[in-house]
Length: 223
Ligand SMILES: Cc1cc2nc3c(=O)[nH]c(=O)nc-3n(C[C@H](O)[C@H](O)[C@H](O)COP(=O)(O)O)c2cc1C
Image (cartoon, rainbow, N blue to C red):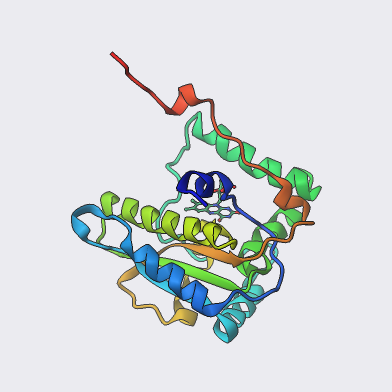
């Protein structure tokens, strides 16, 4: 698969089959991604690959905390600016609405929406997960480097025929994740990544996220 094909084929899956992913393959992916570029080669990523018993314990611990109404941890960093201005707020809203529509969850059904969010913390059924941490003193450039590492992992997974979904949602349970993964206090959770084989019959996996009109995001000068 060419890089272009891999980029085109990667998409977020939000319902996985329970089938395990070959451990050696997973470890090879997170190792190969360490070759990602970073400013001044700082390599600010702290990567945790989790499968098996430990992941089951993490899912169980978060399931226990998945109450209605929610009892979330303070977020370790603001995910969006407050307020999130247009056009970004419109895109964020549209992204969520398409998923809820695919699941047949109405806008006013807040309980079902919350339970859908909690699927994130069961890794949408995936048998493997990666968690990305960054030093608490890191700045915007290092955070961007983490995104580069994340993209490398997602593309390598796609190339290997494995599906994934990046998940900032884990940060509402960041204390539980820290405890189960035995992460030092000086590190901040950036996001999780569910890894596995997408359920082809799950309606939510039929959602294909569109992209903004190019004129909104791309400027090309030819003069
Ligand atoms: C850093 C990051 C965090 C994300 N967090 C979540 C999340 O918590 N839950 C979720 O369902 N999708 C999450 N996504 C997936 C995005 O919604 C998805 O990438 C976007 O809608 C584009 O769709 P695509 O990945 O299928 O191309 C995240 C993506 C990124 C890159």
